[in-house]
Length: 206
Image 1 (cartoon, helix red, strand yellow):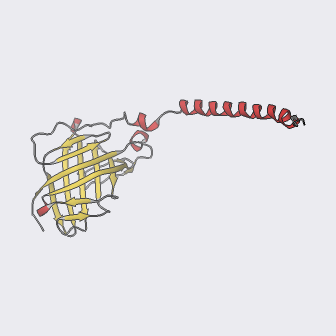
Image 2 (cartoon, helix red, strand yellow):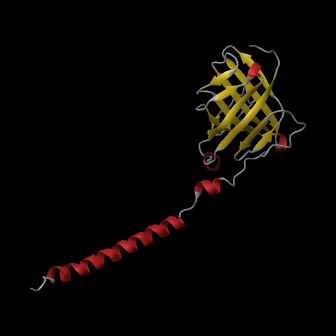
Image 3 (cartoon, one colour):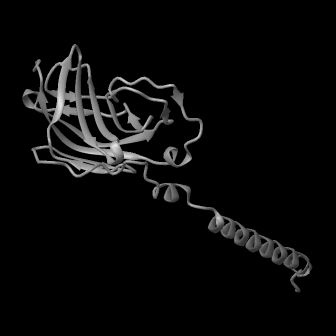
């Protein structure tokens, strides 16, 4: 009994042709991917004017690390204040050419030491001339230590905001004309904050 090979003979060229097409298509896709620029990697090389901040003067018990376009580490104490149900921590560092870099934490629903689930505000900003570059998030938890002596932030990921322009006044109470429409390098960056910040209170409240 002979096997019917007519179907095999008819379909083999079609299968071979389909295989060749698939290989060619995959090769084209690989070439296109290889030719596509790595935007986040390129943006990672961008550094805003004034960054990184000048070297810290002195030392202290804090151990905070900021990564991103305006990276720095800080050991000194933060200026802290408790008002109503908020606890504010502010770290200000001098940047180049008269600029200022700031780390700000707002513990929401503050009642004293303990764990605080999101939302809590954390931002890093740079005021350079009349522009303010800022990275911000409120989707994170923080820990307030015993006697509210320190606050711990773990691996906070901060997203960029559109650059504020025409700004006057301090970064904690600024007035600006608006936001820049296109700041592509800045908008492709990410900042992270992790560590423990010790406090110095002007007027301690528990």
